[in-house]
Image (cartoon, rainbow, N blue to C red; front, side, top):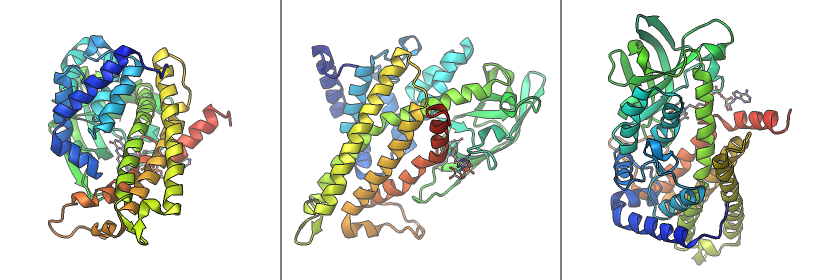
Length: 394
Ligand SMILES: Cc1cc2nc3c(=O)[nH]c(=O)nc-3n(C[C@H](O)[C@H](O)[C@H](O)COP(=O)(O)OP(=O)(O)OC[C@H]3O[C@@H](n4cnc5c(N)ncnc54)[C@H](O)[C@@H]3O)c2cc1C
């Protein structure tokens, strides 16, 4: 990948910058800037704005409505949208199930689902984890039994992000107990308004309700909603997880932006007669983080270039996911530190009735939420196991 941009690439950067300045809703920008994550409505809105510009799917091929951009253009787009404090595009439809549908789906599935993902009309949730199947995902027990041209699905999913606002769920189900447990798993696309689905949101450490339990009680799903072959869902699922890890790496760019917010805040926070930013201890931590984040960005760029060139990137997605999560946690911790006494306005002991996190507690919310990044998409212990096995041959 070349990093010295051509004239056309520089023009493209200006185009993206101008577009963001003119089209990113200010409420969304302020929310992201404060450290609060965008609400689903805001994310749908931003997705639709990008879609109308023809930029709905930066990483998809053109034939499915993607931009067909080069890795350099994708990188420029990510840099500029991060610098504008636009929210990251919600990835579960766009980057997880969308590519599976255009790779393994039927003509009908492609025609029905891809345009609605692009426009932001459909919100997808990921129904993989279960109470006894997180790291050991192949142990999942939600069962799909054939009944004519339908499956009847029963079981429970856990930690399903945003299922309470989702239109559809891509769901791993057990269709057979014979052979290895990985071979009896299929991937179904389930409408969330199907009879028999109950969604129960619950609160997390950051006092937001964005994860849920999903109960499936004899939910009838047409066979035409199965992606690919019966019993092959595990292999499609693994492709998704690899993609998810690689994508989280692209978010490394956003840590740099977060550090700019940290610097701006620390320059205003009083400390021993001067500002926190002048404190040697704070500056040492800040500089160390900046260096490591730059290294992460370059790891991400190499991975992106290799992905597009069709080079096997082995376990590098796991390495990036691991580093990204650790650096994001450290950066958001520093942001909270830069709040000084204002950090205490968050009430971690539990919300008071009617209490809603305020913008000034955004960095605290961001810090608490960042704990999840070393758990979801495969915990950091699992990533270390993958690296040990695939990179070190242990
Ligand atoms: C906020 C949040 C959002 C999520 N969103 C979704 C979602 O949208 N869809 C979805 O399907 N899932 C989602 N998840 C689930 C997530 O993928 C799982 O939590 C994760 O895979 C870990 O599984 P578990 O919670 O069952 O923990 P466990 O697998 O029970 O692990 C518990 C601990 O043991 C460690 N451990 C387990 N096995 C090993 C091993 N072999 N070697 C070393 N250490 C090990 C783990 O690292 C962890 O520290 C979400 C989770 C969270 C917290």
